[in-house]
Image (tube, rainbow, N blue to C red):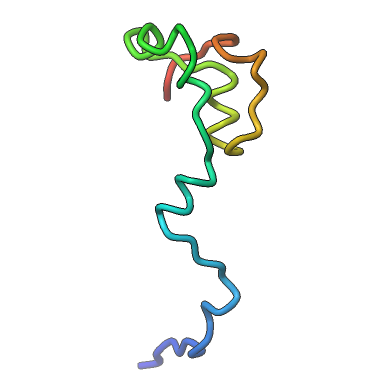
Length: 73
């Protein structure tokens, strides 16, 4: 039976980030100051700014907060 051999330094090229750093890098959520925060939770929808924040971190457009609502997936 053949086995797979892994090079000892296979993960040296993969940057590691701990959970605290990842959360810090996300920055504040667009929902923090939004008046729809509770309403979106009840309706189970998300706005364009929230979707961009989830995918890109702090690079969301303030004019999209509360706009282009879609059901949460």
